[in-house]
Image (cartoon, rainbow, N blue to C red):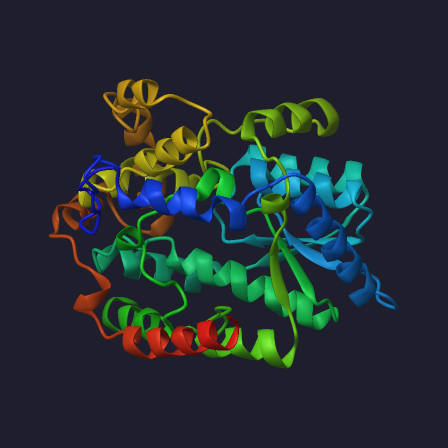
Length: 357
């Protein structure tokens, strides 16, 4: 990590706040042997207890990527009855679609796909791009949370299993991605740059979060935090056991996400997600700092492939490549340039932290 995160700080040893926070959180959020195994056993018992008399113990969000597919495998090993749910926003790669099919078929899980209204969702994605905000994935992040909670509530399920994990995602600067649950920001951006009203979009803001958590009693569980999770080992198992295939890059299970992270963010916003990923892997002991620095000398994208992806993304969003380039050339903005609910959200979360000490 470096000063592409404007909020980064360094101590007298030259170590940044991301690394010190990572190690400080390791015991609380990563596998610690017997202690974690006991916690996992108790958690699984609670999930099964909550699922008694129901068809499913839990809902699992699945994208076709490594983390969510491995989480599905773990659920099967733990004897959980799972409803796999995929939020289809129109950007799935062919490989990820096949991966999902193989996973649910071979593991014998039921599957449900939530297909977003493409014209409405496309308009919202384009609005965020026109707004020159780095939070280009906020519409997708919100839709995933909204879809998973709606399906869980519909099926009377109290637990949602996520493939998100601290081991591979423990370092991510807050300055790179503002709170996706700020519905005021989403509506403001859409009102200013969009052409459609959001009638079908599955919103998931702070009020929805409170409702699902405290009224419906639904919890999100990051199952992989309870395991000695290693991405390479997970990939090998998935390939050998479940006919899973790698899609060629971090988050390339989605064509849009892959392009955003490899091209748009580093070119327009000087945000290179490889720095956060490599930093996490260094702290986890998976790679060396020297290896990461050599990799960062390379462009985060292949110029030929990026041009092809730019043409594909532009066409799918309904704009020309010339318009794409014009938007890319506009000065970067932040959420603070638009109406937002940051102060209210900070107050709500401070109250939540006090209640749940």
